[in-house]
Image (cartoon, rainbow, N blue to C red; front, side):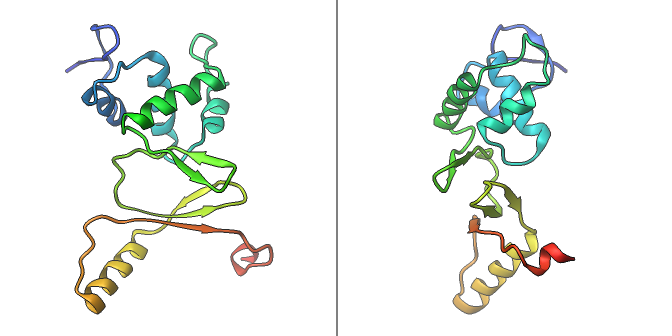
Length: 157
């Protein structure tokens, strides 16, 4: 079954989760937005505008966008609630999907790199809060901001 792509009324490929979120919010699904959303979904990690731009340099020239166009489209997507604009320190901004409500992340403030942590960390926190305070977590978004220690045991293994 084919769905409408939202920008020309013609039928085309199946819409992705993020593309559907655009259509549900009444956004025009332009080819530029589709390429950005496809890049975000393909790479399954938090990406900055610069990350998206560097991935698009490998595209055909008719699909490539300027960095300014990417920033403009990311702002539109964040303003509509499709993506969330997250600032890490003074230098890094990344754009996770707004539908990812259960997240525990370790964010390197030196590089802006975001690591999705194990769900077991959230489960441990959930169980502890329930046991000690009688609360059950209905939604969890935990961001841990960190600096990597140069001589840590994690890097020497």
